[in-house]
Each structure stands twice: as C-alpha cells, then as structure tokens.
Length: 179
Image (cartoon, rainbow, N blue to C red; front, side, top):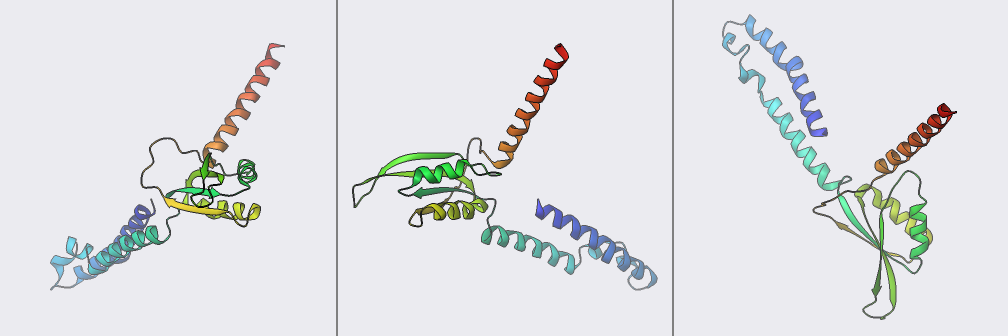
C-alpha cells in the first residue's frame, strides 16, 4: 500500500515539478524543441532514481521492520494459566491461544506451553505481559511463512462486539414496538 502511495506521489511531483516546467522551457529553445514533450524528458534520470529509491526503501523497511509479518509465539512458564488469563482480559487486542502439555527433555517434568499466532508488532506486548507475570518465562518467536485460514485480530473482536451491541439494541427496540 505504501509503495503505491509513494509511486503516485513521485509521479505527481515529477509531472508538475519536472516534466511540465522542463517542457515549457525546452519549447522556448530552437535546439531542443523535439525533447519538449517527449517521454525521454518524463523518464529523466531523477525519476528513475526516485523509483529505485522507493523500491529499495520499501524492501529494506519490510526486511528490517516486519511489523505486519505473522509469527508464532510460544511461552513456556510455570504460571501459564495466569499468563493466559491476562491475555484473555486484555482490552483492544485479541489473541487466540492454545495450551499444550510438554515434557522437559532434561528434567522430564511436565509443563504447559502457550501458543498463539499474531502479528510481529504484537510480540513486544506479549513478551512484556509474560515477563510481568513470570520473569523466568521462556518465550520464542518464530516467523510464519504461510497462513491458511482465519486469523482472529483485534479488529474482528471489535466488530463482533459492535454487532452484538447492535443486535441487542435492535431486539430491545423490537420488544418496545410490540408493546
């Protein structure tokens, strides 16, 4: 989305800032009159450099700051139920969690593991939440290459809450109309 927005801004600025003024000036000269409204004038070296800069900038930002990448977060802790309860009580964010029983390879002790898939940008929130409850919690974040299915996000949670409120309001309005 941002790549398209940047390209539109570059096209707009190139047309009104370079192409039109340069063409008007080239019309005034006898030697370069053929270049006045030519595509060669539009696709100047500055325009090509601008396109290359936008593409390189977009790729590098997505590589170094992958906030919209899906990740799998695994939390291993002795206080996993408290962490899960805190996650469920969180306002404004929605996380679907799964609990698994695991057995330690060295200690052979049984322990629960909390797993959730979320956006990379939300992992800092989960890490802080887990550390607040258990400083010794072991948290792993793994890149997810492909997701097939429905991902439950805060936007979906808010929409469901609004639709429930709307349906309750409609039901109460209907019952008042029946009186």
